[in-house]
Image 1 (cartoon, one colour):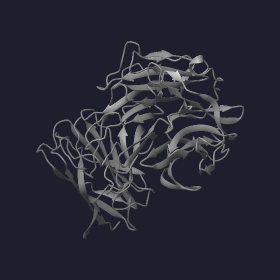
Image 2: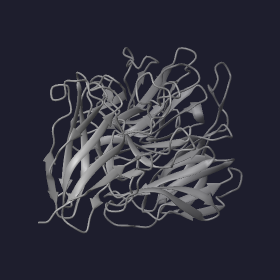
Image 3: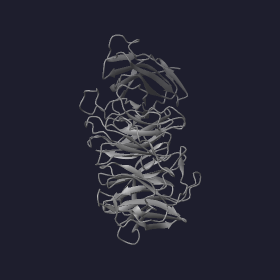
Image 4: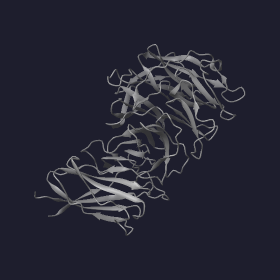
Length: 516
C-alpha cells in the first residue's frame, strides 16, 4: 500500500492556538524551545529550527523569598533584586551574587514594590518606603523615608492584602518612574485606590533631597486596587483590579489614563478579565497582562480610545507579576509556568528579534526550578550580549527553593517539544520518521523521541538518540516506529545531556493506511 508523507516544515509560527487546529508553521506545545537561536554556539543568523535552550541557577542559597523585581541602573553595574520576604539582594556584572552587606533585610518589607529612581533603589515596605543609595557615593539603606522627614513626612501607606499567585502575594505598592521625572507609587486606602508621588532633586548627590513629594496625587474610583503603573507618551497609565477574591469574578480589571496635570484621570478602559497584573510600554505599544487566579493568561495591546486587541491567550497558567515582563527588540517576554507538556517555571515570548518573521508564541526558557508549584516571578534582560543570543535573567520560586537563572550552554537540557496533532479519517500505522540535526550526534547529547496516539491515550518511546545508539556521528537518522493509530498522533522530543542537539526541518513522517 502506498505511503503518505506528513512533512513538518516550520515551527516559526509558535505554539498553536488549539489542540486540533494547527498549521504548517506551528507546533502543539514546547518548553525551553527558541527558534530565534542560531543553530550552533558560533552561528550568526536566526535558525528558525527546533532549538532547545538551557538555563542554570547562578544564585546560591541566599534567597528565602521569591525574587519579584530585578533593577539595573545607570550609576553602577550591579543589578538589585527585591524579594517577597522583604530583602534586597544584588549581583554584579559577572553575574556573581554580592555578599558582605547583602542581603539587606527591610523592616516590614514584603516585595511590595520597587524601582530605580534618581540615584537610589526604592523599595516599598508594607506601610512605608526604603531607600538604598546614593549609588554613586557609598550607598547605604535608609528605612521609612516616606513617613520620615526625608520625603516630607507623608501619611503612611496601607498594607492591603492582594491576591496570591502560586502562594506569592502580588505587590500592593507598585512603583514606576514616569517621563516627568517623578516616581509614582500605588496604594489602596479606605476602599479606594490612590497614587502617590516621590520627587527628588540634588543638593550634594543626585536625588538626595525632597522636591515636593506628595500623598494622593490621583485617586481611583472606590473599589479599584492598583496593580501596575506604566507610561504611555506623557500619560500615566494605572492598571487596577476590582476585587481580591481568587474564586469570584468581582469585576473587570481596568486601565486608567491620566495626564499627571489634571485633577483626575480622563479615560477608563475595562479589560475582559478580573485579574490584571502587569503593564509594559515597548516600542510605543502598551501591553497588558490579564487573566484570573485559577488558570488563563491574556496578553492584549491598547489600540486607542476604549479598545483593546488580543495578542495572545493561553488557557493554563496565571498572568505574571508586574516585575516579570520585559521587552527587547521585536520581542516581549513574560514569566509564568506550565503543567503541559511538563511542569516548569518558564518564560514565554511573542515575536522574534527579526520583525520580518511571524509573530508566534514560544516558551523560550525552562528554568532550573524542580519543586512543586513553580513560577517565574521576575525577569530582565541584564546582559549586553550579542544580537545573536538574547539572555534573560530569570527569578523563580517553587515550594522548596528560589533562585536566579542565567542562560548556560553547558547546563543539563530538559526542553520538551511536541508536534501538531495529525489526524486522519482512517486507521493507519506510522512506519518511518526521518530526522536531521544541526550537529553530528556526539557525547553528552540525548533526545528521547516519543509518539502519542489517539488523543494522547497511549504512547510509545522510540530509540533514544545518543552516541551509544548512534555511533557514527550521524546528522541524519531514520526511525521505524510501526505504531498503530485509530485517529491521530503527535511526535514528542525530550532533550537530555549537556550538549545541545538542534533538530532541523523538515521532519518527514511516513504513514500507511491500515486494513484493520
